[in-house]
Image (cartoon, rainbow, N blue to C red; front, side):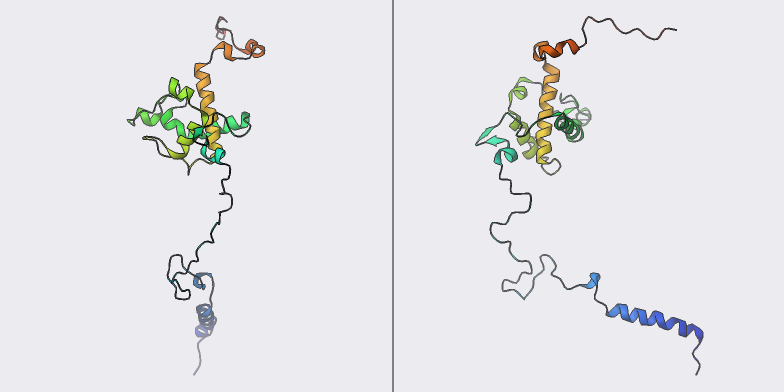
Length: 202
């Protein structure tokens, strides 16, 4: 009996299929499935309990002031690291992404979502919020307040402080007087009596 050429050609494919079927690879590996029971351990669980005192890398959070905004039970009124232009720009960026939809870019509580019917949050420029410590803003971002949910998952701790610093900048920008500007820098401010710039001549 002669085997047709087509049959000869299909033999490597058949042999390859059999070999693959016997192979144990990533799709069929010996492992414990999370939360699946197993009779190997006395407690019937495949997952082992985490040793007491274990802390995930980067989550020790030993600096209570940095991670809570409080010294004891009182909010602190400072940023717990040096503030420079980069910090404020980062705070502005995160504020515009996460806060301005409700609070508005000026912090006046007139964000786009509010204009479409959501309850208006208080303006940052009212006396009460101008006088609260910076740690208060950090705490509200972390834990939420009233109708505002927490943003702990969306905004990293250092960025929350950057946002708090930027909120204070917004407050100064809308309520500052000439006396708040250092004397040596007042000459750089545009004069209120300066004539309006002329348009292009035709």
